[in-house]
Length: 378
Image 1 (tube, helix red, strand yellow):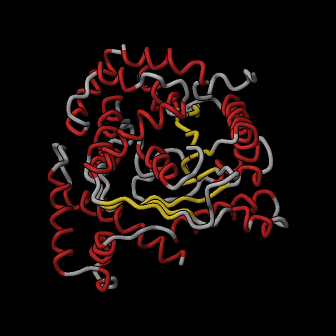
Image 2 (cartoon, rainbow, N blue to C red):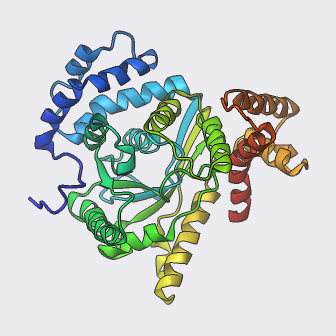
Image 3 (cartoon, helix red, strand yellow):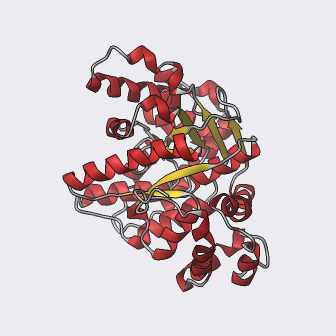
């Protein structure tokens, strides 16, 4: 067995049972479970969870037996509808590296796994997750059970090179030898203003361990009708404006995770774009720097073109510009409803020096940017 990747890989199947046992006996994890019990099936307790994990001896088994029912319950209770369109890819022998915009810390990849399985794909995804989110031991255990591999953050330049090389080699290993899919966000962290752009450095990292074509990249667009964390993002914008040294605490990260999971999202839509390998040869004559810049631009174009846009997105774009440019995409009733929605989100922000005009502009920008980017892409 290759031990090169032990520091970043998910659990191997022979490590799954001990990991489950340690998780179920972690008091902090039990406390977190109690905080999300209202949305889980009635009667669930640590004892029931222990029973639910009997017979699980693989990470895929953990995803399908444990995670999938939980994610489905979240979708039923915290969204009005969810949909998946996978044009250009089909279940079969191919494995894919899904590069997507980033809407939710926890759910982006978890929902994708459910949608892939329901669509008949033979396996789910290994998931790239930053170690900055692994703030407690139970989180590290849980994500490694959920087929996550670890991305190191906040390290020196030398360490960054070594870490990037290791991760790139691991991702090529996952596609070529483990025959698993991969999910990775197009950039480090969520785009708090919902203007989604692929980091060129990410694509350069992917090429460190082998040819980019080997990874079979598929751009993936994630669209939420409502972002449960929108008011928290707006709040953070003001905190950073007022204090450039402001940094979120561990409790802030947990609050964002919990709000993202439990908050109402409206319609959730996932859609794949054209696989990169269909057109990557068109870039063969570019020099290295231009190649990665153009690759990022085209991935962005696919993601932006495949957004699912909702009335609130169009209302936000018009309120921001002060023109009725997109008025054919919403009714007067939807206009009034979205105005009330924004008013309600501002009311949730607990700052002593709340700048309501600034917060309103930030919230509207979050919902308008998908429209603006989509119009540039189509």
